[in-house]
Amino acid sequence: MFLSYLFVFVLAAIPLFELVAVIPLAIIGGLSPLPTAILAFLGNALTVILLIVFVDHVKKWKRKRQRKRIEEIDLEEGIEEDWEAEKEESKKGKRARALFDKYGLPGLTIIGPFFVGSHISAFMGMSFGSKRKMVTSWMMVSLLLWTVVTAVASRYGVTYFMPNVEEDGFLIRLFSR
Image (cartoon, rainbow, N blue to C red; front, top):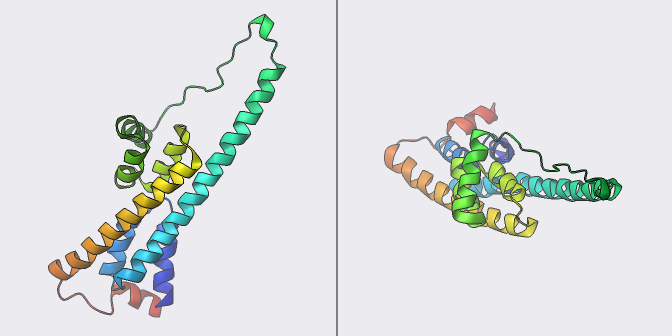
């Protein structure tokens, strides 16, 4: 049983998987909704916070490096360099930018996890110039909201659409061998 819940925590922590997918899978697999929701939230939140801190440190390092380079440049000679090179954005990056432009940081962090994923939403929020504390706060609100909505919908959806779902589901059987 412990391994089943550990699996939920680890799967939710992996950036390719989202708690919006992990929670229903675990509940259909026979796990209890409350521990599943808590562990999925903690797993996803842990890696999102680590990502936000990492991006913040990279941004600080980059700013420090740019200041050092600017000091070395002879401004009288008119040397100009574009420090922020144009980057080719991915499809998810473009969607995240559109969400940010239209709804701001709250919209990106609340809507983003469903459309582009929580890790990409956090990364883009930091990349678009938002402060670490604001991105962290909004991401935690968003993850909590998505956790509650997904857990409740999954719990009642499973009992409604699959009334004969086993108490001893496939995840419990998988890790009990």
